[in-house]
Image: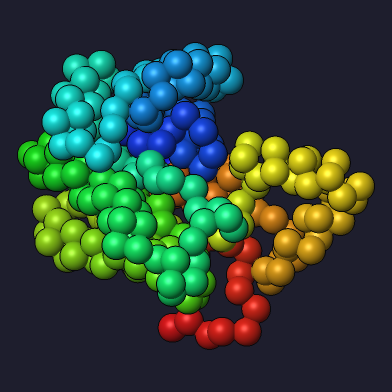
Length: 265
């Protein structure tokens, strides 16, 4: 299937690593010009160069902090100047949620919640605010927000709030921007194979003298009984970013390999 992404122009925040990087790679491979954004300029520039080599496409690095509106505005201005405009925004810039982070009620301070909302929720709002005038002016666009299956499970107040809030943001934007030709969706990855996960499992394997395959098998509690790769999440996002996804907006797409038991309708 031709996703009709050739010639499209995309911004991917959090594009220097993990799921964001995999999304940038897939969009570039499908023919889109891509601007990747992150705070670490050195890592970002290296990622853009590598993605350009891998895909043969145009991948441009623009350092940005989504916690700051002026930085976000500069990102969009640079993107328009570098690749000629913007058609697609993928919001993937967020602090990773790890097992070592505060999860019980007593440990969740106001500052913990504020930090999660500031980057993952308000950060997504800032980029949408900066990009939407360009999408509205051309009468077409796609915004895909990367959230997480933590939206559907009470594991931590801060973790759940940030993911549920992204879903609420998505639905509001979808209803408001839909008549302007802009689809907005949220993707909920589950446990996903990224560079960070591979590093963590290698360290645990060495510490416990347990094969990585055994550690992965214990973690793979989803319906397909294996860890989903970041590239497989990126395939879902690429479809949602394409003109072919017109029938889907305002909805949450789970991309974690299935959750055994619950029925979502």
